[in-house]
Image (cartoon, rainbow, N blue to C red; front, side, top):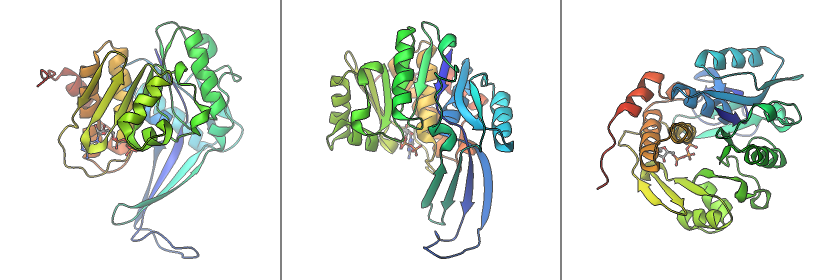
Length: 302
Ligand code: ATP
């Protein structure tokens, strides 16, 4: 079982000619709502990889919360870990202009008030050999407590530290696998080179670190292995969500027993599908596309 402990929200994407200035009122070119939140995104990718996955998150007692529960269940994500909060579901308003530049405003009340251990959403359900993956939308102390609980239960832990907390808030010795982009690595590793920064996280106790490098692919660093995989070739349309697809597919592959090289190549191919299409969840690879990625023979190392 893979436990994704994080957030779920409704994203409203509003297309505009230009981003509004202070005090300006403008007319949108179009708008669409979709399920969002890094926790929900990663859980959906993992479910589409045919893994047994549950999402532990907080949603409101409103229509948006009901919609999230229904959509996740339809995706095959277990929803017994969703806490229904007396309040509104978190939402994110994303304005995107004609050049693809955006501004994002997030309401995070449901996530920031959520304590999954106190709410008894995870404790009894985590078994030895399970995976638990967290992101950066819960409070730092809650994230640390969940990682500690997972280790205590004999589960494997993964952390995708996005958004990042202050560097001092992390205990890297609780993390088996860190997956982060180069900006996050630089912010947390305390040096301007992302690979050197990743080494600093290893030195601080993380078991393995995967740094994603956008169109340059990704790099794994661990005590035993160091390897780099290229990004799969694609014409990039919109990279939003690529990090969540990469992370979900990587964890699903590792949980299914794939070796590092295979898991990294699968993750890069899954992320490339997302990059080639517009939108966030709307751009994610389907179950069929992921099955094709998993079936493809892995090329021998050059
Ligand atoms: P985002 O925040 O946009 O979701 P991120 O900043 O967390 O993404 P990136 O390092 O930008 O993460 O991308 C994650 C992975 O997606 C990369 O490791 C790569 O495999 C794939 N990817 C990103 N950009 C491209 C691209 N232009 N072409 C092909 N693959 C890409």
